[in-house]
Amino acid sequence: MSIPHYPLFIGGEFVEGTAKSRFEAINPYKKAVWATVAEAGEQDVRLAIAGARHAFESTWSKTSGLQRSKLMHRLADLLESNAARMGALESTDNGKVIRETRPQMIFAARAYRFFAGYADKLWGSQMPLDSRDIVNYTTRQPIGVVAMIIPWNSPIGILANKLAPALAAGNCVVIKPSEHASVTTLEFAKLVAEAGFPPGVVNVVCGGADVGRALVSGGVNKVSFTGSTMVGRELASLAGQCLLPVTLELGGKSPNIIFDDADFEKAVNGVLGGIYGATGQTCVAGSRLLVQHGIHDRLVTQLAERAGKIRMGNPLDEATEMGTVANEPQFRRILNCIATATAAGARLVAGGSAATGKHLETGYFIQPTIFDQVDNAMQIAREEVFGPVLSVIAFGTEEEALEIANDSPYGLAAGVWTQNIGRAHRIARDIQAGLVWVNTYRAVAIQAPFGGLKESGFGRERGEEALDGYLTTKNIAVNIAVDSHGANADPFAIKGLT
Ligand code: NAD
Picture 1: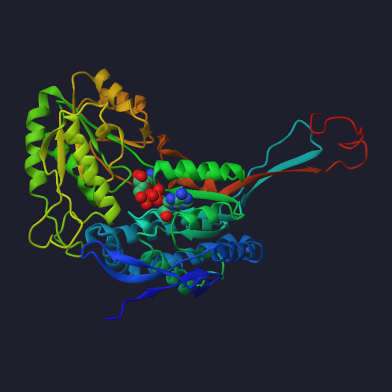
Picture 2: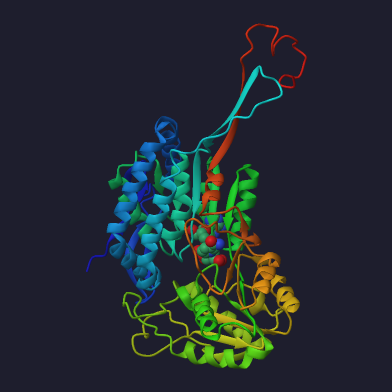
């Protein structure tokens, strides 16, 4: 049986890489090759950047906001009408359940609509100076060509966080999806072409680390990266050498804090969804569960019982609650983390190994795992697992909870479960995280800014603030004096003061 092949998308054309090499897309549920993808070389990256630069200078930066907005709405329409198909492709490519991938396509479409609304409203301001002879105003302009490097866990959703504000602001882009999940980004490129975007506004080059490095050092004007902290650090230093601005959305080790007075059932669901949603392969996974002593035993018992009942299976099946891990290296990494935690003395109360059984034989399945009696100094509490592994840490007081929560190199998300409104706001105020959820977890919206502190990165995606990452401010001062006695009268005087 023949399998589909996906070429690169450069300058509005679907093309093979100049080296004619390909790599395989693996379905993690079947551990089988299901598509092939053209691999870009340095020459292709150069062509993509040149194509984006040409589109930026000749067309896109001069296209009206209204026209950009119309194209973005058209793209959103296409994404919506293709949501079921695109969701199924993404589930096939990365093992994420269809009940999450399909709504993510709708969420991505929502992002294009949200930022389309800004495309014709990107005005600056006018500020009166001390001198009446100078009119001073600002304009907000696109940065130019943006490199976007994305991970495998939610390619289309994560791309939308970057691409929607970038296009609205008038930038052109070169996207590099992960070598572990490239297919939906290339399918998405077909929708971009169908929507009628000018050639070169959006380009897609595929491959691994070398392609990412070539892109960052290839003459772009900005880098937007989502991925691991380790790679983010490397890319930020490379971008630093080229003096490029960077937005980094990196990893997390997010605390989910449950106080004795929490609504028990709600908290149980929040904890389960927070760690096992997306098989734990989300940057905001609530992977450190901080539990107050009074509720600890009851909560851990209940969580272990519920974790054992989570329905694993074919990611394309609507009934499946937890899909596979997305690829083999990640599968091995998670099993290693579990072994290390066991060796360090954490007490295993659920899961702890690869999952086997009916419908699970072929895929990269890992049991929903819980470690109790974790010390915050253990590796399992400090390093991101990016898998279905929960670490439980008990605490006594509010101060202690906050201290443990903040004792982490990361600062992406946090959850707090309590009926005490004052305590909820105190924790929200003092916790070192870019996102805080009170009595809920993983609640996201396109209007709400998203991003981290510390080693979780910098810059914000979604929300109005995302536009700041793709715009630059220009100041313009105009001398309107009627004669040479005005602002130009004394060549050595500082202009604008009086
Ligand atoms: P990764 O860092 O390994 O790879 C991310 C992207 O960078 C991929 O496209 C990869 O090909 C590329 N890349 C890898 N090494 C590179 C290098 N040396 N130079 C240039 N490019 C390189 O991350 P991953 O394993 O694909 O994804 C998982 C990570 O992503 C986790 O750490 C997770 O927390 C993070 N993540 C963060 C967010 C967020 O919004 N904060 C969202 C999703 C995932």
